[in-house]
Image 1: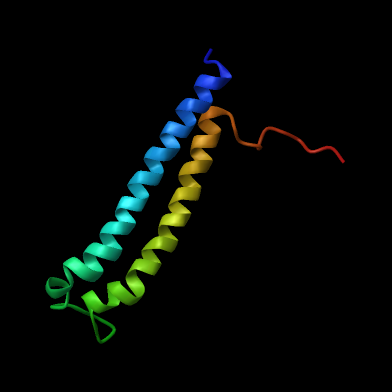
Image 2: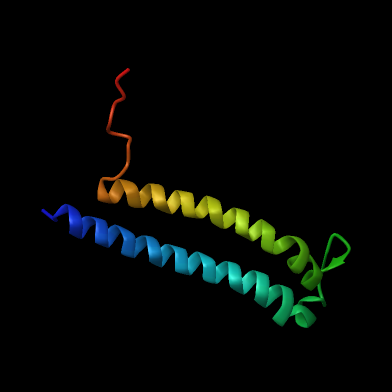
Length: 93
């Protein structure tokens, strides 16, 4: 059985990996799609607006909110995996 310290270390290592990947996705969408690839994306339209403009104004915000929900889901799974979730504890008044 792993010691509590090694479990916590593995937990935080995995948490940082999740954070890095999710922030990298958000960076790619907000900076890449909104700025770097704007000219290529402007060939397409969403709701009458060019796609590059849409990503710069709205898309990166939507992606960020979606990534928050993905992070919550991943962290709930990670908590359960390492036994840090509160689902097995009962509250006493």
